[in-house]
Structure formats: C-alpha cells, structure tokens
Image (tube, rainbow, N blue to C red):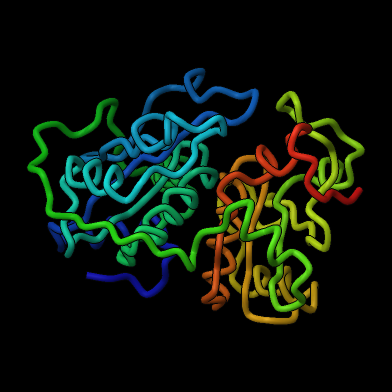
Length: 279
C-alpha cells in the first residue's frame, strides 16, 4: 500500500492499520544533545519495533556519532525487524519530529522507497487520544528486505571538498545561526566554530511548528527564500540527524537530488583536519 504523501497524520495511519497488514511501525527515537528521552514516560505505538539508530544501526568502528552502517548490516537488521520488500514502513519518534527523518534518509540511501513519517510522532498520536503501549512487539518473523546502497543520496567529506564551490550544488546547514556563524561554541569538544564555505543556514526549527512539520506551502517558502541554483541539495548539521529534517522537507517540496552529509560538522569541524571554514 501507499499514502498520498511521505508525511502522514495519525488519522491516516489509524485507518490504514485497520485495512492493511503489511505496515511496519518503527520507533526511531534517540536522545537529543544534552537531553535524554529516558527522563520521559516510555510510550510507543502498538505493534512497534525499535529502529536502533545509535546502536545496531551505527557504525561502531567510526570515530563519528551514529555513522551510517554498511548495506549488509542494514539489510540484516531490517530483516530481523520483519521488513519485507513489499512492506510499508512508517517511522516515528517520541519527541515529535526529530530522529525519524534520519531513519527515512537511511532507508532512502539503502534503496527502499516505501517509507513514511508520522507527523508529530508519539505526541501527535497521543493528542489524537489514540492508544499507546509500554513495550515493543515480540516474536516477529524475519523478513526478506534487501538493501542496495544509493550513492547519489550520500555525501562524505570528499564529496563536499569536491563540490562546495559548485554553484549547482546547494549545501544547507541545519544548525542554529549562532553555531553556523561560529559565535556559539559547538556542544561537542574538539570542533572549530563556523560553517562549510558557501553553505546556506536554515535552522531545522524553522521548518517545524512545535512537534510537527509546517504546512507544505510554508516549507516551500523556506527553500524559495534562498533563490537556489542547480538541482542538487546537500544537507549538513552537527552529526547528520537534524540535517535529515531538512532533507525530508526538501523531498516534500519536490526536490529529487537529495544528499545528507553523514559526518556533518562532527567531521568537517574537527580541529585536526584543517578543512575550509567560513565564519
């Protein structure tokens, strides 16, 4: 099955759950920098499973936070979650909209397109007075999911170095204006302040209305404001999480050539790398 938009509301999801058995619900929650979700009551949608961004789906050999795993690891973990090639995957998080777009991008870069985000996540579901439970689904039958890495949706340090001067490549930074300008210190140690030269600052909060994405027209206005040239959009942030909030919004407004810089400022800003930086 499919939804009309990649962004769905609680009513749409509830109706579809009553009609289709191929929907897989994934809780993609991670902690925010300096703010732990463990302090909140544990509540998830019924029949959900955990999409472990910072554990099983993070490359443990990398020095950078929650680096993308290989296609082989991603395929194995999605099969373990019972996802099939014909499944419909719905992502959400317990903050509202925070880490679910990162999971969306991970599926996209692994070649899986039947993936959607619940706008507002658990808070929106709860606001609609819909049921929540305090445990994940158990006894899931393994699926036949296949991962095929799509390099055209991925950016690394070398890609940025090659393209940051290219007027046809639009690099957006989702961090706050203070961090982008270098006036506010980075929350992670050992990082310069500033931004990738020629990049544009669009703080991720400006795309959100509290716990949900702003309406499509307002999202389009945010991107139109920059008068971009070229069709390529690359998104960066502190560590690849909030960059994905921008990437998903970019997808919603119709952009097709979308990349997320996986290492983001956690890599580019490293003092020992001496990469080009503007302030």
